[in-house]
Length: 210
Figure (cartoon, rainbow, N blue to C red):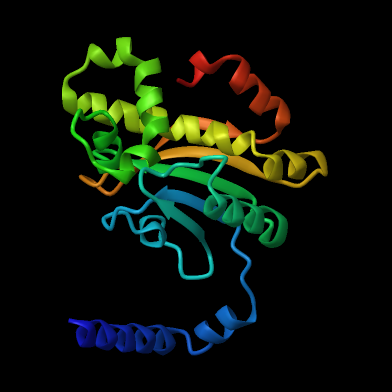
């Protein structure tokens, strides 16, 4: 199995240089993507491929259920590097319908350590329990996927790395999308935060986006 992967790697590298002989030389020279993608670890959600970008054009952070928790050092390191060093212009939080992490967060069974990681989604489900209870189970999961993206986009927009960038006049926007594995399309949830005033308005009127 591993030999097959290595062979596919060689074929992929050859195909890239066949079309563009300087492709890897440019990658070595610099990393200057304009986008940070915060997405789910699900293997069916390949960030670059979904939006048709090559390596070097999308900075990516992935974890179970696309969370942006303010206490997670891994996420914070990626965010700071993207904002302060690479100076990305867009941070896109991307969830996906049918997310297993979101589903696990509202199940009653014990999943071990992952239950601790998913506790923010469980709390979010409790906040919106009345609206969610009006839906069947699958639609509950999908709606909670959307609500989770919105909440994580709010988390990103309130992060000190992001707010400091806005204070110094850096061009930076936070967005929220959801991807459908069924058809390969992304849905824009209408969350677009370009500055501290827009972030403050989002927190002041959470019902507008939740």
